[in-house]
Structures are given as structure tokens and as C-alpha cells.
Length: 79
Image 1 (cartoon, rainbow, N blue to C red):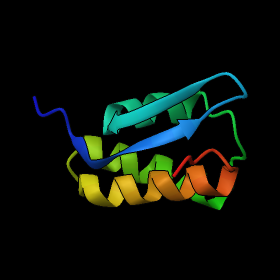
Image 2: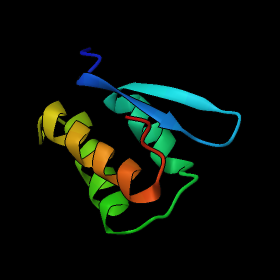
Image 3: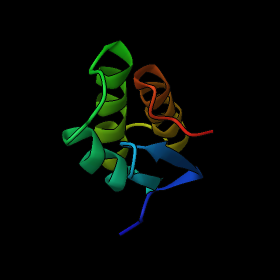
């Protein structure tokens, strides 16, 4: 089974004391299910695209871009 790696790891700041780096679609889905930030339009798109990527219906690149947009929308993106 493919790990479905993101083209570029995505660094996040989850709280004042907790940071993480998301490297795979699976990690992104796990984090999206426990999302600490705003669950707006970008969040919903990221969840949909990441689930699609797990099923092979969209690329990991597209899922990665959507996940980064959700993190940016929520103020969690570190880069």
C-alpha cells in the first residue's frame, strides 16, 4: 500500500506548546478529524480532497494544497 506522501511536508502550530508536521494524506485525515481550528470552507474542501486521495480519486498534490489552505484559513500553518 502506498503511503500517499505529500510533495512537501506541512508544518502546523496546533497550540502554544504543540507543533507537528503532516507528511501523508493519512496523517492529514487523522488531524482533520480532530481539527483544532476553524472548520470553514477550506476545511471542508481539505477533508473531501484528502479522503478522495486515500481512495485514489484525486492526487496527493491536490490534497496537500487543500490541506495547507485549510491550515492557513485556521491560522495553523507555520510556513
